[in-house]
Length: 634
Image 1: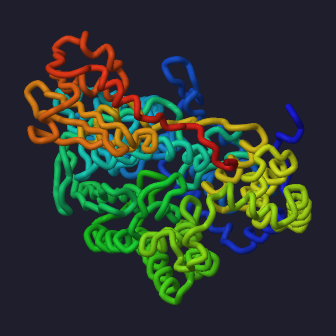
Image 2 (image 1 turned 90 degrees about the vertical axis):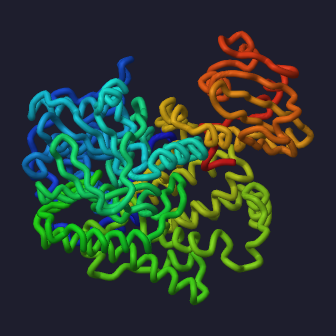
Image 3 (image 1 turned 180 degrees about the vertical axis):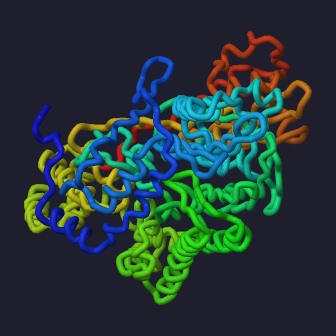
């Protein structure tokens, strides 16, 4: 392996910047360390969690190096946070409520009932969830799972469900609870833009990075994502309103719906018999994302802050502990009140001040550079931007209200990256001259500028050897100085791929269970976004599906647009092909399990009119997403 592919040491400028962090923040405050270790009952005897084929999907000891002193190649604040989130094992929150932490990006919470145990948020994959449940049972007995709750619609809170219950368990009466709208959002987020999100998540969580002081040390919210089997069992009971109460296996729960906060469908819940409050992912020990770097719809910090105020009013007077689906609990009513109030003020301040500044005419970039958090909030460790950041969250608020355009007409019709880069580099004297000057900037410690200007060279000549290595070096130094775990991972992943080439997408949430949970309308929508428009401009194909014991559905491809209509009508009157079949068979064809040309041979399928080859022709206009598209090069 070439020496140039290896990570480099921290530059003097980076070393000095990280030293300043130690002087700025209260590292002598060790309450979080005590809270993170409180109630520890033990951990697994086997460090490696494997899939059925023997592949390692999680290594409990991968972050053991975090027990050492912080090196020059890491921001000391992020190193501290990563050490806390890497702590793994079974922990007692209060008697009857337990958490398994450090077995995945998220926590699994287990609440003991009269007959068994109620599982909240069964991690990202079945393998880690099964290992977490096994650890709980090793300490608390082989209790059956008597219920499951998904607090919200992100995959690390439902994907491991098949590691704790089966379809047969649910059919036999084990309830699966979730907030209203959960299934729609869980499916649509991971399918419609799932390929792009998963590729960008590879950068965000850095699962492919080597773990160590010059590599991946965490993601702020947790360490990284597991790489096992993601699944989904649809909910059997929806939580539809704040104040709704449910009792499962003798466990009383009072719910607060919080849609549009950290997820489009989310809830908090209170356990009155335990004086315990679960805040899902609405209040954790970091500043969260208003727009996650992997991509998502912009979250509403105004609504987020208001729901935190509502949670305070509803539950704090009867809560001796608050815990969440990431990080560690907070004990004591006064501390719970302070914690939730500061979290509330965090999102409210970002919202209000960004709006104040944009109404003064400042752009998103200008606001992100100027906005500062109040000193009282900055002194609290749990408000730090380990996962979200003040910088990209303020840009998210700007985007939510004003969109991508900053109002300057010079930015209304800019050249795309490659064309702009070619012109920039030509103006600046050519690739070699730009790199020569950028090397001087690197020596001066201006890594932000190096990354910005060398990017133009790479989008002009992606194989320019000096530019690739210089850009990798600059991104690496920016990563070493980042307090935000996801920024560090993005920077270091960029450096890794520039030096070694693409590493792909380690974790995909576009799993068979999620595809099976698509409604037919969502399935047709997911096909429509794959139509290769220009190649389909002249196509005009109509396919009618007469579903057995259900509606007629007609697909039409015309003008590069795939539309669908339900029922009889003009669109269904004169199809190029008409097919009678079961919904399960239709799904198999549309998901690629059954080839269109094999359809006529399937049981229960009848071609009622026209040419069956027309279905193949229609599906032939669909493109295939690229899960490994380039990020730091064109």
